Length: 107
Image (tube, rainbow, N blue to C red; front, side, top):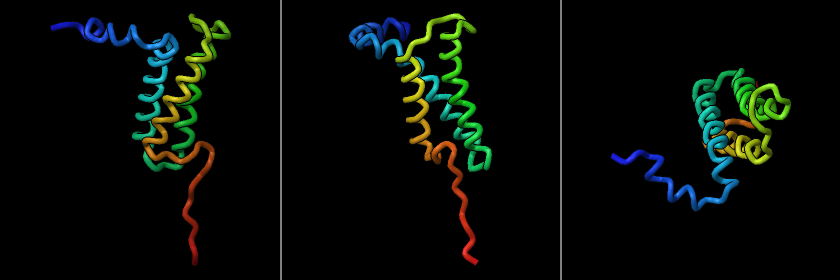
């Protein structure tokens, strides 16, 4: 059996550098947002959970720029995180962050 890395290596090498670098960040932020959206359901705290997840994802990259954690701040990584998170929210049918959708009674 051929290891996955060897099998997809030729494909990955043909991608532009920015795509190779930002794709992992987009993928894990997509996964984080998907899990949080699925677990938070229609709870009133859903927006808080989703906002906390975005803060965690983006915050880790920003912490690299502040030298709090090892690494280098990369704006393309930050963009990949935002895109991955946003796509997951769109696919999960999540309401906009910061806006509550409440049904009003018409009694």
